[in-house]
Image 1: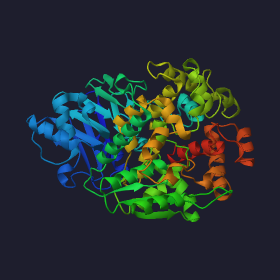
Image 2: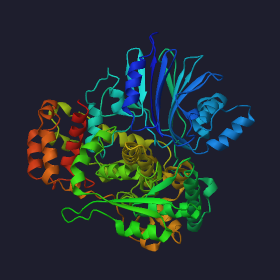
Image 3: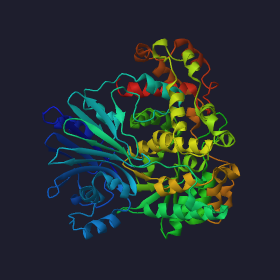
Image 4: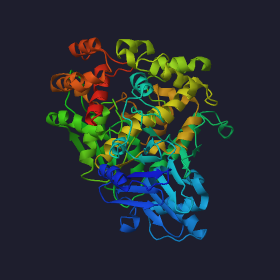
Length: 593
């Protein structure tokens, strides 16, 4: 797990190694164990290292293979790197390290960009070919590892973090009006390739981009879950699906045990993380460290779920740490969390993950997490209402369930110059629902959520907050083979038992029934859900700052009404509407934009 960066020039000039070094240095928290910058021809590459595989200096990056004429920077982990290495050795390749980065280099030489189809893992990488001057960028199937891009005349730069790219300079930092529309309506998600800034884009998941020395490029999307019923599953009973899901998850958890350092678990006490603990225990992992976070109650809302996480820890005999956050730490943590955000992320879970990661990083370097199960197995509240909607009406029904507000409502929130004469968020949803495949409305909703919303909300949240403390988070529910299996599973089996039915059935006899049958929980951070006291003061300071007034995003009458009554107005899914606007402004101010 690391931070990568680079530049390729198209105008015959040398790459700006100093700018790449600044970008790389900005990502020191993603990779506190080492750094390096390397230049070859028109390409410069930078890397910050977090040591997980091959702790020796032989695993340092940028990794140069002079014999192959290739240089690579890599962020993430190829879980099947040992199996691929054996295959590559049989093909005549010789290795100088035990790193999965070297496996990437040899695999790229052996199979070209199609090597990604053989990788089981999470990754973002850049491979430079010394002889051809071609730069290849790649990102994993579910977008677990980020990759941001910025172009200017004669060059392209990339990095694992948007704020890091800003350190290189020369970026159009104006707000993208379409991205702003997405942020305000599509549950604060800005889908790839856009970001909130006009001059920064992101490589979409499951994409390999091949960039020629003259700046032309081609993209290859190498994976998409079908969300259709498959012939090979014909005749499977509910019990068969239960068994198949459990076995696939067991394999996914086992794969993510690969490390040269200890692996722990972020244990919320919910079904998903509890299943991960159970399966790790079944694999014989002893002395497993588990971690739970909680907050003091506010406005009558509980701030922890220790009752359930303690039950799981005791049942499986884990080395458990219960982290109750002192209220005095909360307000400073809000600003620190915003610093850690690569993009504005409105979920209050961010603060929870940030503070949890801070404490966990003192004990382990790698954790497994239960993120992704709700999007893959239909665990959210907006899925059941879609089950009976005819496919042709699916996009409209999904938008009514999921989006924060209607397009027309923005006229009462945004200043006129930011209003659009069309609804790009609804158009985006309709485009996805119109794509081939996805047999039923629920299939189309799950396809959209697992390939877009999941990537740019929960997954990005976990990556940003864990990497802020040099902590690698692995997500077995996003093993692409498990995702493919879940996508093929009949919707009624996923919706059973109030959602995630097939997963709950798989968990029977594996985790305590109290965990399976409990109400659905979440990472509660009451102080942000209910803005008052110093938290409301912090929000007020941000949205009334002269910089915010000069920016002119939000109508003053709307802000005045919200500040007078900050907790009544909610988005469609119950988020605090004032916090959504304030978070964006605080993020922009933190970046000096």
